[in-house]
Image (cartoon, rainbow, N blue to C red):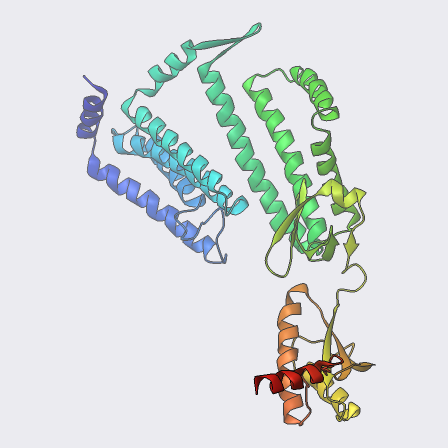
Length: 426
């Protein structure tokens, strides 16, 4: 008898109507609990997902209820449908946990989506083998495949169990670190840079501890890592020196807070806003949208201008030339009012207009005003230019064109030659 025929025979011998009713009741009870508890939470979460049933809580509750019903009813009659539902709900809970954690921690990562799909395929394959009764022989076959690592031997099953254990620890660690960052750090630490370094350190420590626990549970001798640690130290000392320096510099920057996310800086003639501070590099974005990736070691060892460290305001100057017949006081008043009419211009400190020089073609004024963010420079300058042009035209103040005087000098004897030539032609 094939495994499929055996499964169909078990289903035929059981009371499917009773099994279906029990399973439907378990699912309805699980959904009711999720609805009662989840309606108080706003937004997407790991426990409830986006629609209650795509979170972790629903398959876990349904799994617990279905398993309890199977244990209780198994003494009275066959429950083949509930036996099938248990591995299906267990696999669904694992897939939902992985999907929700990866969505929360890596919302834009394509690699996380690939890992989620691969895990889903293997999970459903394991469920099919479990239901058909083929999982024990498959596990025995995996156990028989041995690999020798020096004096130690590992089976393929041990390797798979180790990968699954490490993956489970990784998912749980990411979940705990994301919860700590969202619940504790965001409420107690207002500074974005300090919160980021605290979140990174918390995640790194949890991942290290969880990985060591997972390896120890699988049976890996952790004393072997002492040799690996020595080799890693030598590698850092030679080949990975720059990489290690960048990582250390990243933590120094975050701890000292010499640069913070949102600061306006100038690095190697590139001026922009610090968009993000990674452990290896810092991302700087200028007003045009261009981004520069700067290694953190460079920010520690070289001269960096932080334009926001003392004062986040940015000064903008505009040069204006008007005709010599214009009233200087009226010009000053009009250009200052033009700057104040633009919303992005700061009222404190107030805009100032000064007569800078007597130019060859015009009276040359300079308007100085301030904005409080890098991205507002170009829009504010354009709006002020348009407002100045409108007000000066309305006030009848001329903006002269550049004027040049050209003197034509005639060479000596040129007139005589011209006269003689005319006579000869006559």
